[in-house]
Amino acid sequence: MNVIVIGGGAAGFFGAIACAEANPKHKVTLLEAGRKPLAKVRISGGGRCNVTHHCFEPARLVEYYPRGGKALRGAFSRFQPKDTVQWYESKGVKLKTEPDGRMFPTTDSSETIINCLMQAAERAGVRLFTGTGVKTVKQFFAAENKSYFQIELKNDRSFKCDRLLIATGSNPLGYRWAKNLGHKIEPPVPSLFTFNIKDSRLQDLAGVSVSKAQVRLGAGKNKLEQTGALLITHWGVSGPAILKLSAWGARFLYDLKYNSSLQINWLPEYNQEILKQDLVAVKETNPKRKIVNYCPLKLPKRLWQSLVNYVGINPNKVWSQISKKELNKLVIEIVQGNYKITGKGVFKEEFVTCGGVSLKEVDFKTMESKKCPGLYFAGEILNIDGVTGGFNFQSAWTTSWLAGNAIADY
Image: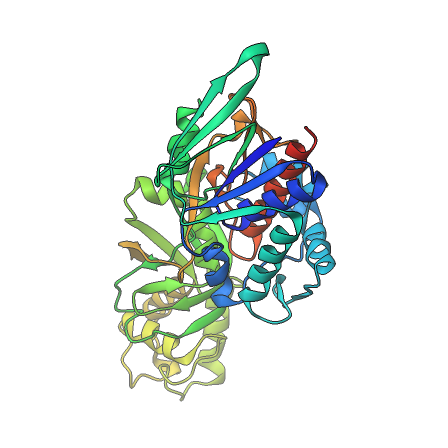
């Protein structure tokens, strides 16, 4: 049986290897448009490659996926991070777990993962063609209700196959082929990005970080909320809390053209009343200390000074002189300050997309299309995306492993 895999990224390689290893009789060909395959693997995790996450409970794992979690629940019961770790170890690559749960190769180099996948593909007999851009993908029906796929390349070469796995990530061409083969495409929009904010409160604070902040978008039923580390940048805010919020709010922010109000609680362990009580106590215990110089809270000094100045407290004023009005304004700025998002930034060189092939049209036991027999999908071409931390790679490993093994069974 001839098998074609389009897309030489993480999902494409993993699916091709899975198929070739499970059934050596199949002729597996991997087509990659670029000269160098696994480009996204190379730059992921700052060049270290965040392979997966140390979350070995499928029920918990799915909670890290703004889109696709429900569909992945059964898939993760068959191939999850623990299986990913074992797979790489079986190839001689050991992974390590960092305090936040992210898992990297012990070498701290993405080249280790790239070499592993390249070598595994070669050993399994996968034929790899690079610099081979695909022009068209068509399905033809032959006698006895059998079908095959015809893949025309940009160099005028063509391939014919019985089974086709499309793993082209967020490449628009992949969406086009899937649509032409009968699939609905959920409109792709960016996910995992930073927020552009121009605000005097954040001016000159680039590099200042808070280990735990609470950030909110929207209100009522549309309210989105995340808690985690936050980093102030030259263009606005970043860090895990912001990236997670951007993932869950990807479509919400896209619809608003990335213009929205962001509420920040710099100290989520406090509510207004408790914080007010604590600051009133400071008036009594440290009455002669200057407010701007004495921060009684676990806030970076420069951030504290910026917020104090913003609410209009005289820099020479001491704690005993703070008015009730000033204290209330300061409390509000700390626990529910509102900032105007005016655009989005890019999270390093990594790009994750919300959107893709509708999950209702894919059998998640095999990753085969429900619309087009013999067609399979894996990775980011599907309407699946996770938050930062190795979750997007894990969905790629899982879906491609399922697809590769399902194809091998024929």
